Each structure stands twice: as structure tokens, then as C-alpha cells.
Image (cartoon, rainbow, N blue to C red; front, side, top):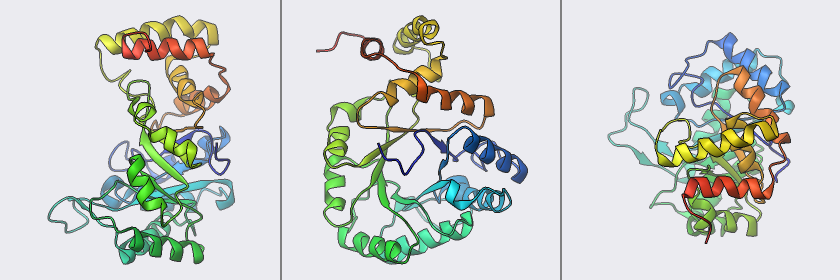
Amino acid sequence: MNQQFSRIIQGCMTWGAWGKQLSKNEMISLLKHSVAQGITTFDHADIYGDYTTENDFGKAFSESDVPRSAIQIISKCGIQYVGQTRENEIKHYQYDTDYIIWSAKKSIEDLQCEYLDVLLLHRPSPLMDRDAIEKAINYLIAEGLIKSFGVSNFSPSQMQLIDSRAFIDCNQIEFSLTAQQSMHDGTLDYMQLHEITPMCWSPLGSVFKEDNEQTQRIRKVLNELSPKYNATEDQLLLAWILAHPAGIHPVIGTTSKERISAAAKAMNIPLSRIDWFKLVVASQGHKVP
């Protein structure tokens, strides 16, 4: 488990135009509340809000009186999105040296944060040049613009390709009780072997989004376990992730202060091995092999 980041990470994708469209004062309040709960790492990407949310957050952060040293800021680059703010003919990925450097500097400027604790390549591109990426990352680290480097949504072979030139500190992947593939396809194994910190987006999966046989089985077990742990269903889903030995950091997306506080309490739920497997079986619909 990487002590550089809080155990649970606050995702900021829905803080701006792509979600709740929070005002500056609302962002300040949510930022302070998250920090008070021990959630001190904030996850961004240049693309969020059609390249506007980082700027909105930066304005709030600059007036929040929260010291830069008290929080960690993640950003991602590389997706060229077809929207209102950039003249892109088609959605694509860009990872040449100059663009990575420009994008990191732009995020730092927008976030008003002096440096990024980690810069992630947002999604793998078939045109990735590991030497170009290495050159950009070496420059950004040498200049103190980023503290570390990582990737997002990368497979083991893609991590290996980039890691052969630029050391990968973390990989942000999809992982939840209803999206377990990285636990079985070697992704989490590779990260443990190479001491790469896993972060996971959409940690609650489809449990509350869909009503089908799988989610009904899961909800039944969650309902049975809730009194035992004095915990809500979403807390138990986070505790299930936190129990994995890879030291996964869930990235929560809620803007509700109550749910943020509840998520922080999941860090103290001692989910047993038997109950962990009960949830696995509920998700898969059959006993483990």
C-alpha cells in the first residue's frame, strides 16, 4: 500500500460540467470536508468537464486555505476529446513528448497546485512510443513538476512496455465486486510483483445501477452482512476492495458529504476472509473453482 496517497481517493470527474456543476464555494466546502475525513487525495483528468473541471477546482483550491502539502493531486492526460474546447476531428490519444509536457503544465496551471503528485497516461494508445514517454516523464520529474508517474486502464503487457523505460508508480483500473477481471487476468498480480500501486475507478460497480440476478444475489448477502459489521452496503463494497492484498485505493465519485464520510469509515471495517468469499460467490453465481 502506497502511503503517498490516502487509502480512499476522492474522484472529481462529476464536480464540474460533467456532473453536479458545483459552485466555487461548494467545491471549497467539499474539498475541506474530504480532507477532514482523511481523504486527502483528489483524482482529476484534463478531459473532465470538456477540459474545464481542473480550472474550476483550481479556483476553489486557491481560496480554500488548504495547504498544498496537505493534499495529493492526481491528473491524467492523453485523451483528445471531441468537444467545445478543442478542435479535434475525432477522439484519439496523444502521447508525444511535447504534448505530455504541455498537458502536465496546463493541468498544474489550471489546478493552481505547483506540481502534480502523480501524472497518469489516461488510456493506452496503439501508437505509444515508450522512448517519447520516458523523455517527457524524466523532464517533468527533473523539473519538479510531477512527483511520480503512472498509467490508467493498462494491461500487464502495456505496463511492462512503458515500465521498461519510465518507472510506473501506479495504475488506475476498473475494479469492483461486479468487475473482477483484473483479479483474474494477471493485472493485479503484475502490479503486486512490480510494486505498482493499484487505484480503482467505479468501486461500487453495477450493484446500485442495475437490477438483475447478479446484483440481487449481491444485495442479499450485503443485507445479511450489514448488521454484523454495522455497515452500509456501499461501505461493505469498499471494504471488500480494501481487503485485497494488492493494497487497492478505491476512487469514489460521490459529491455527497454524508457518503464521503461513510466511505471513509469503510477503512476500519475488518471484513473476514469468509465474508469476502461470500461476496465473491454472490457476484459470480457459483462456488469458487
